[in-house]
Image (cartoon, rainbow, N blue to C red; front, top):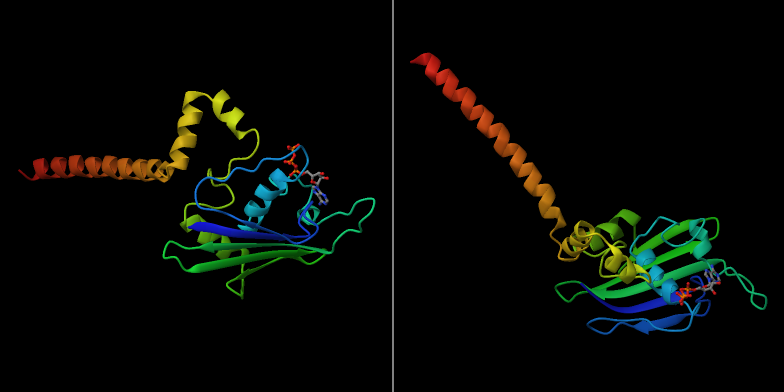
Length: 193
Ligand code: ATP
């Protein structure tokens, strides 16, 4: 999947509609303290279905709506639109909108969909709100300070092979129970001789 464009409106500090083109390859966001770098990353997570206020550095989900400043009134809604392309190159436009007192609503290519439908699309594409492709501030220091086993887990997650461990455990369990069945079968056959 390829992310192409992000549009934010009323989301955290992005009170005015703002559009960002996401070019192919690695994208870094730089800027002075408090300019909204983390808010941008959170907008990407949020539109992909993030539902933990803690991950959004919020007390509640409605806290993502522009809360107002000394000179500007608060907004009633926040909206993030992500224009992406799936692996076949087809357009994938996802909209998440939250209104005060009304919760979140999602649209996918113009159709109303459930939060689960959106999460599934991104999970299938091995991305999603917890994708290691989104590197937030402090994450690099965390990687440097991590123990070798933790670092390996991060690398495996990034390589998309962490699911293989689960499948390996399942396969080993099946193998053990098959070996037990074989032993039992040998005992039974020995009893028939
Ligand atoms: P730093 O480099 O210091 O980590 P940053 O560039 O990552 O900063 P963010 O943390 O993304 O900046 O943005 C912080 C700004 O967003 C603060 O000024 C904060 O007041 C503003 N902000 C966060 N939530 C809202 C909201 N709901 N309404 C209005 N402003 C908000």
